[in-house]
Amino acid sequence: MKKCALLSVYDKSAIVRFARKLVELGFLIVSSGGTAKLLKKNAVPVTPVEYITGNPESFDGRMKTISFQIESGILYDRSKSKHITEAKELEIPQIDVVVCNFYPFDRVVDETTSEVSAIEQIDVGGPTMMRAAAKNFKHVYAVFDPADYDQVILDLKSKRNDHDLRKELAAKTFSYLSWYDAHIAGYLTNEEFPEYYPLNGKKVADLRYGDNPHQKAAWYLQPQTKSAFKSLTKVSGRDLSVTNLTDINAGIEAVRLFKEPAAVVIKHNTPCGIGVGKTPAESLARAIEADPVSAFGGVIVMNKPMDLETAKLVKKFKQENGSHLDIIAAPKLTKTAIKQLSEVRKTTGIYTFGDIAQKDVVRHQIRWIDGGYALQTVHNTVDVATKDWKVVTKKKPTKAQMKQLITAWKFISRVKSNSILVVDKKLPMTRGIGTGQTSRIGAAKIALAQADSYTIGAILASDAFFPFSDTVELAAKYQISAIVQPGGSFRDRDSIEAADEAGIVMVFTGRRVFWH
Picture 1 (cartoon, rainbow, N blue to C red):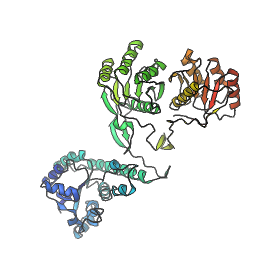
Picture 2: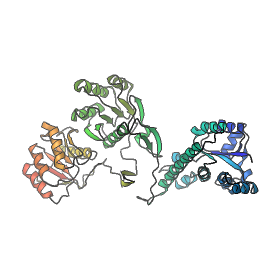
Picture 3: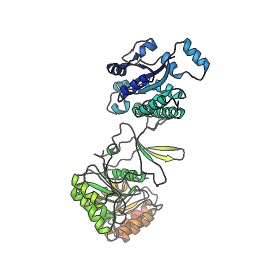
Picture 4: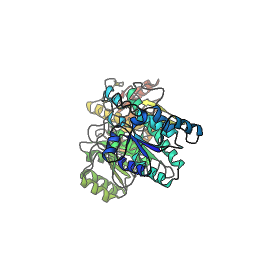
């Protein structure tokens, strides 16, 4: 029985060369549709799939390869004499190589695609054949990635009959099938939390290491994502570790909340300084000034392109503080900015990521637990709705204070909880951040001490309610002028009375903004 190779691909790169090599190795090429036409055009001998199935291509191409003959030719066990005998009696071809990649549902279907069009992009025959080939990997090569063509040819030429290679290809195939099906399920479902939740991602690249140098890591993106990470490009400097990647993400989450130029310095996934300005340079100057000590070895992320004036601030930071930055990421950088940054420190990773969507593009946020994960809806605070805010003190905020209260609320929504921060009384920038603390008063002490003299007349924000009046009392000692917090404690009255006694404005937002 002559060995067959079944070729039916959407991605036709290198398929002609691969088919020719299979022919040289004695394979009969079975093919259909556009693949068969391309091979014939290039003088590769082809047996049309309908010669094997006995049926014509039908229903606008929905039925081509699915048949008893094709699936049997892939699935029968060559190590069992009974199967071999049955295959001969039933005139089943021996298909030892299956090469198939699918209609590009992941590349052409998004939320704007009509249901009718999307359904036509769901491949059925290809996944059926590939699943069969992967199941029977002891005897069959399941190949969907053109990058694997050469190693398959080498193995066939050497006659090594490499079990491990076929097993590896089978595992890759099942992963591909899962990823493909997950995207279809995600498109079709309207359930917020479906009973079966498919996680689908495609590897982008290996990372330098994980959180620590002894940990290996890689990163992935979901299909059809509009994330800025889809366009993340290294300009120069170091490759990314997991910590660098997640720091860039934390930065994007912070600056995307602003339409005006915004910059943030990130350390360990949380801001140590956030600034907003009329220009990118002004925003970065404020972000660095907010905490130049913590900025050492930090990650700068901006929501507007970086020009030479902005890049010069990085040089100034090094000159004045003897400090360096690990990563700088912005939508774009001018050529003069890149030159300036590379002269400051060659190992600093310089990255661009294009435009940032103002709201998160993911449907859910994932929180990993031992053996699984929890899903939650996304928390977006781009447009802060103040209609539900309540001024709970006798003293009311001025227009200028309200503007700063809104800015402070945006800032703190992207700072790791428990958190308290101090915002300058006039400028849209942080002056002190108490982040990731286990007590609210502890976070307040850090933020207020860091802000130092800038607390006079400044704004204080809290991501959750005050369980006691102690934070307000401490803020009064530092001469804070206004406080924004969710409210909701059964001791709210104590905090309100403390604010009234100190002449502090206090506003309740009615919404907690924990960020973990």
